[in-house]
Image (cartoon, rainbow, N blue to C red):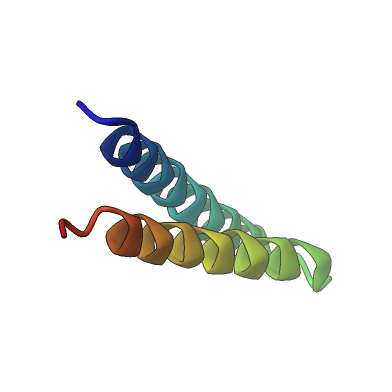
Length: 64
């Protein structure tokens, strides 16, 4: 396995984990009835980071 493919796999895994944590954070704060915006903002940033990492992994893993 070449380093570029390994890096793309790592980015894809971290992106997926970030998306999962973001969704769980959003669901837990909604179900708890929390009125503040801080957890929702953190969940938004986690999901945005996850999407960015997955896009970067898809671009990096292209074969020439």
